[in-house]
Image (cartoon, rainbow, N blue to C red; front, side, top):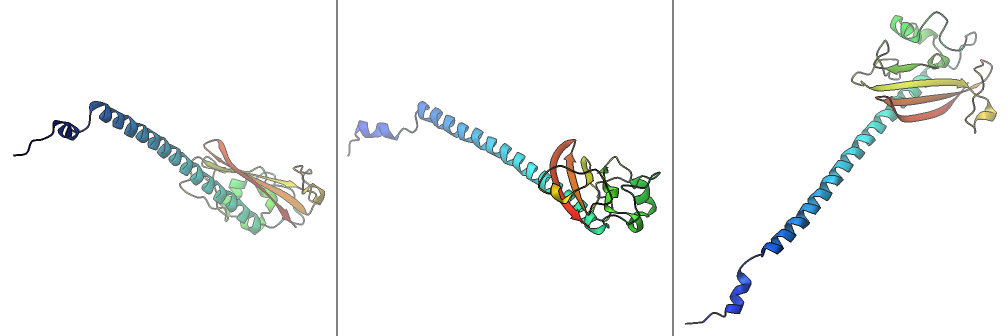
Length: 182
């Protein structure tokens, strides 16, 4: 019969309470750190999705500007007196008579009539509650291209600066500016 050595058998008992507590603390800290990363990642994904939506909404206005004529030869700046852009959209006069200056000062959102935001053909985009497109069209001078100044709205200029601001629930998400030449 073999005799067991008592010193060897003491090593086979398992973990001590201190070792188990230390392991629990290390795993707990790792879990808390991972939860923080998940929260941060979720917020970043939401911001990226909002920015992508905002860029697409600004591109819709850019596409619309590409479709509209610069300024009608005998026209005036902006929407004709006595009309609103929403009335002109509703009765279908827009496609035949509109020019780029009609967009000046317009905001397209879920509370306007017809409801917006709009796509590149003046059609409402459904499911965009909280989003708005605000458009500014200002006459520009060729000397103003490198500055942020705009000249007074005049029909004699062959250059306009279009600025689109996209908001979501009242917070600005994206703004872009481009030049349109005659």
